[in-house]
Every structure is written in C-alpha cells, then in structure tokens.
Amino acid sequence: MAPKPTRPAAPPFDDPGADIILRSSDDVDFRVHKLILSLWSPFFKDMFSLPQPSPTAIDNTTAGEIPVIPVTEDAETLDFMLRSIYPVRSPKIKKLSDLRFVFEASRKYQIETFDGVAEESLMGAVEQDPVSVYALACRFGLNEIASKAAPYTLNRPLSEFSDCLQYISGEDYWRLMKYRHGCAVAAREVVKTQSWFTECIPTLRLGASDSLCRCYVTDETLANSSSPSWRAPQFLWKFLHLVAVALLEMPSSSMVTGDKSFESLWISVRCRCTSSSPGKYLHDGMPEFRQVLAAELDRVIAQVCHSPFNSFLLPSGYQL
Image (cartoon, rainbow, N blue to C red; front, side, top):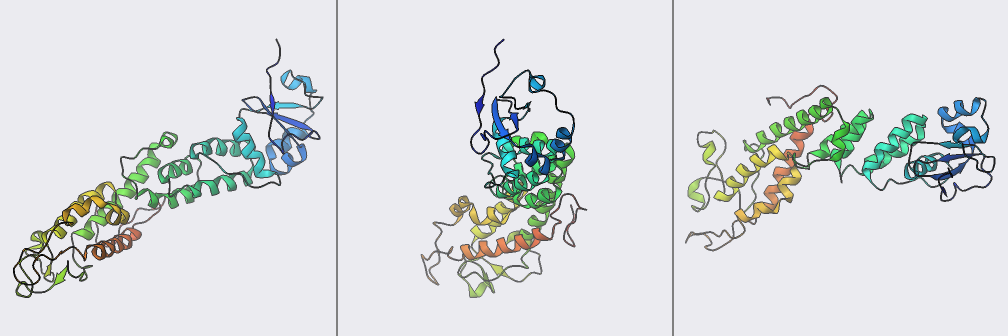
C-alpha cells in the first residue's frame, strides 16, 4: 500500500536542516530540531535519550533518513505548541474551543511555557466568553483563572450555554451556580432598601408630599418603613421591582445600565399636574439614578467572595 501523502508545515517548520519530523494527525510534516524540543519538554528529552530506531521502524515511513514521529495532535495545535517554544512571535489562538487541545498537548508533552501562552489567550477572551474561560480553567486545574472568570459570568444570563461546559465536573458547575446565587441574593437586597438613595433631580426627590406635586409618590412596599420620605414617579418604583426580578437571572450592574428595554417605563411620561411645570418630563434623573444603583450593586457584589474555590461568603447581614 502506498503511503499517505503528506504536506510540509509552514515556515519555520519546513527547515531542511531539521533532524526530526513530527507528523500531525492530519498529515502535516513539521521539520524540527531535537535540541529545541529537549530543552523545553522533559517528554521529548526522555524520548531522545533512548536508543533511536531506524527511520523506517518508527512509522514504516522514510523521510530522507530523518526519523518521523506521528503525533495525535492536528497541525493547528502542533503549530501553536511549537511556536510557543521556538524563537518566533508568540502564537494566538483563533477559537477559544481550540484551547482544550492546546492544554491537553501542554500536559502531554510537559511544556510549561506552553501553559503560559495558552493561559494568556484564555484571559484575553474572558470578557467575550467568560463561561467558556471558566469551564476550560476548571478542566485543567487553573483555579486562579477560573476565579477571575467567575465575576465576568455575572454579565451573562444564566440561560447562556457554552459548549465548553461539557468538559467540567458537576462540582465545578455547582460552585459557579452557588457563587451566582450568592451574588443575586446580595444584589436583590440592594433594591429592597433605600439607604443608598441620593437625590436625582427631577426624578428622585427627598421631601414631604406638600412640597412636591402628586406625580411623586413613595414606594408602596415600604409604606410602614421608617426610611426617609423618598418620592419619585411611579415608574421608578416599577423599575426597581423589575430589576429585582432580572437580578436573579443576571446579577450584574451592566444589566441595570445597559438594558434599554427598561426605558419604555418612562420615556413618554410627563407631569400631569397643573401646578409646578405641567407637561415636563420626569425621567431626566433616571440615567443618574441607574448609575447610582449600579455603583451600589458593584460594591455589594464585590463583597461576595469572588472565588468559587474558597469558602463562600456573603456580606454581613445577608442570608441565602
């Protein structure tokens, strides 16, 4: 049977002066040097210290008397691995899902510097796809990166799925869900109180009813509260109610400031009173109010232990 056709790798792994060929699973020949592989990989160092068989005995193939070693990695993974140890520009991973193969090769060939390059690529994707970053970090025991990725997952709805979740254990998934739940509990407590309120004129006012028109009302859910008399148009209290529900799915300040669907509550609301300034819009203070709320959410969520791998903590006074 004729040998399968192969093709040469891209430079610099097409060196005619190489003394070993690594053949990828998709039949790409990487012409490399034993010395470089041995310096960076204990795996290859041990391999090359053993008596070497003849070139034809390794894979029943010949390549100009250069030994050919077939590997299970495809050309893209092998290229990334070799560029991590050769004196060339550091490689970049194009797809986050490919990092799984990169880390597996790193463990297999014991190339520590390979881990560093791959971890850099992992953190570079944390804002774009934090769930996948968390999953891959857990899969390969990178607890520090997993802990850094966990807060970023709060900016994504719980229903968002990542294919990379299939690579982690139920325990690692439970840790993330427990962390998210703790953040949601802490965040919902914020919207149940008014201690963080500040006047956001003309929308949120502090004062007695006789000093404001009847468009300004108190929060009915706090009717028996001893809190100061904060008054606002009804849409602000409705907004807080909807935010409390949304925080269960996405406990993040970015949801409060970035979700434009909330604006339908107030965008066309005008003062209906004949006193004061009839017809004026009452929502001009909402951008400021949303920023104040977002800042308080960030403060409280930051107090929740952000590492799913440490003891789980909530701010003092909060209960699950």
